[in-house]
Image (cartoon, rainbow, N blue to C red; front, side, top):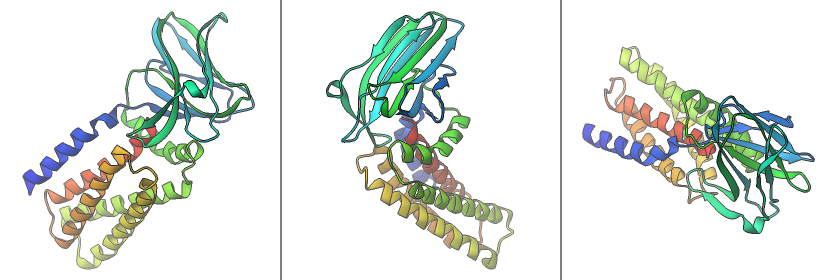
Length: 291
């Protein structure tokens, strides 16, 4: 059992390794001017043109590598979005333009989202202030502006992504907030209940009367998670990370059932391993938005 579990863990971690390489998500709301911190670090700014351009301000005290790319969510009425890269003295040093016919359809196979990918700018620039002007002729349409190409996703960014995930999926890709909320509610119930049971069994403080309602709450969380996840997954069955999540969720259900069957005894390997699978499942859900 120990070797089998460790082998599965290693395979999952290796398979999911690309999920660590992602854009830090940023949601642009209620502002015509956005300050870009750490411009060399890979970040994705999700926003919408509402009648006027959106400006992104970058200031650096040293020369740096400036990478800029523009994408728009794929839809039948998608409009191109342009970017002018303007130096502080007003000189335009780069322009990302082109009709949609010149943009490439782009399926992000990890996140499972469809885009139209526009041109990119990648050059070392001098110290100073730069403006990225995002616009189109009607100043209408949703966009994703990628800035920076150094991949970094520390723990605090994972927490931010978790908070932004329901909003981004709803605002940019039209995924119902209720569906995402239901899934995260289920995960909170399931993970929280399992953690409490694991702690009680480790401390040998539980009994059948204590475990029974917590176990039922945990299974309710698993059911909510599974239903919401299935409704999300069937919209993008080609999603690579989505298929990995399917396997992890099935493994979680099996391990949880076997763990609960062995209560009240503490199970040295199965309990922590099940909790680790929950954490991995949560990590992938967070990572899906960051591409």
